Amino acid sequence: MKILVISDVHANLTALEAVLADAGNNYEVVWCLGDLVGYGPDGNQCVQRIRELPNLLCIRGNHDLAICGDADLSIFNHEAGEAIIISRRMMSPETLQYLRSLPEKQVSGQATLIHGSPRNPVWEYILDVSIAAENFASFDTQLAFVGHSHLPLMFTADPQSGLVERAYRYPGVTTPVTTRAILNPGSVGQPRDNDPRASYGIFDPQNMTWEIHRVPYDIPSVQQRIIAAGLPEKHARRLSAGW
Ligand code: ZN
Image 1 (cartoon, rainbow, N blue to C red):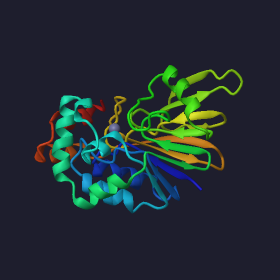
Image 2 (cartoon, helix red, strand yellow):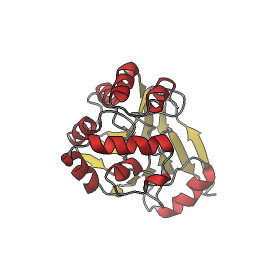
Image 3 (cartoon, rainbow, N blue to C red):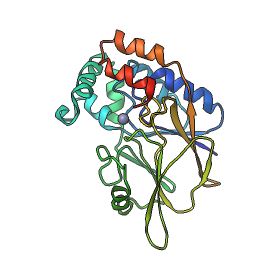
Image 4 (cartoon, helix red, strand yellow):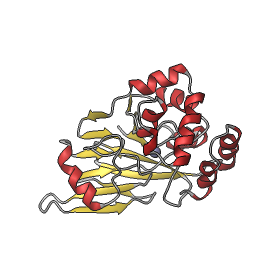
């Protein structure tokens, strides 16, 4: 059994479809780590598509929370806040109801799923070793899967010393997961590692391996829809270079 791990789709249906086509039949279970909506033009369609995925576990992210009106918008930067207000008007009642129903955390076997960090599930970014090290105490499973930073990072804790290491995961490499680890699949709909291709992960819980995959998609068509929807132009521009 393999698990497709996606995060930060951010209302980008073209990127999501490219990921699902690329993953093909290579998975039986889907974990979605939040931020289904926000920034992009296709919120309702993305939520509908994600809900149809097989054996789905899905959690909510900070943008999902904010679009439902359950977060203080002053936390977001100017354009992100503007995108949230516009996106909120675009959401159907069904989409909002689904986003509201999502939990902040799910546990499946040896994995804890959260959007931000184990100790602060919706908001905290795990970008460096010290934040990761503090978070290893906040979950009981061997692994935690997180999104939020939009970066395909892997943090491992040495079983003897507890020393935490940070590694950026390139596509095309199968990584054995032998220790406690915090794994991030990168972002489907808005990568931020200067690689504009959609990012996702495949986790194999039998063989305990982790792979990052990157998929090109039709970025100009998404940019056109962002502009046409009246969403901030910055969020169209950034897709070309992946920042
Ligand atoms: Zn995000």
